[in-house]
Structure formats: structure tokens, C-alpha cells
Length: 96
Image (tube, rainbow, N blue to C red; front, side, top):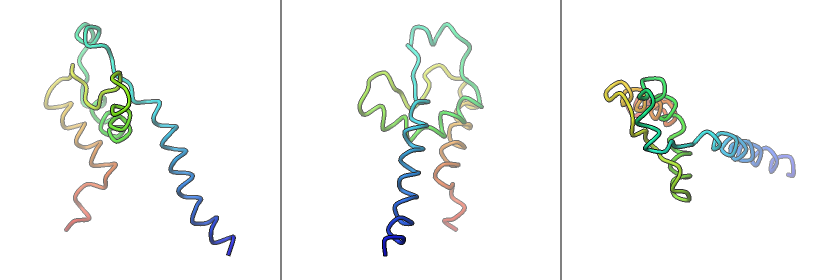
């Protein structure tokens, strides 16, 4: 019975470890510094979409973390962001 307990607990422990490991990627740039640099494009939107759940949790506890980049290229950033979020949550393919 103890072996079954370990098999059930291992995926949860791995998930929590990966969550803490990836949470260091959720960062935001100061808005003044953000307007001086090149706007974020498709690939930055894709990455921000992938880390969006972690960024959201971090934004609840810190004002220095944002979910969405303010200085972005518009449509291309939005497309990357939506594809990144869809990749994490499985998209809509399983709903059909």
C-alpha cells in the first residue's frame, strides 16, 4: 500500500517543483524603461502566454509582476500570447 501512495504523490511533487522552477521567469519591466526598448513581438507573446498562469499567481502577491506586456507589437504579440496560453491549457481540440 505504501508503494501506491508514493506513485500518487510523485506527480504532484514534480508539478510543484516545476511550478517553482518556472516561476522565476515571471517578471515585468518598469513602464518607463519599457517604452524606450524595442516592442515585444510574436515570440515574446508566445513565452508570456506559456508563463501566464505563473505570472497571474505572482501578480496576486506582487505589484512588480504583470501578466501581459504593455509595450508590444499588437496583433503579432496577441497571436503569440493566445497560442502560448492555448498550448498550456490544451487548446480547444479536445472539446470537439
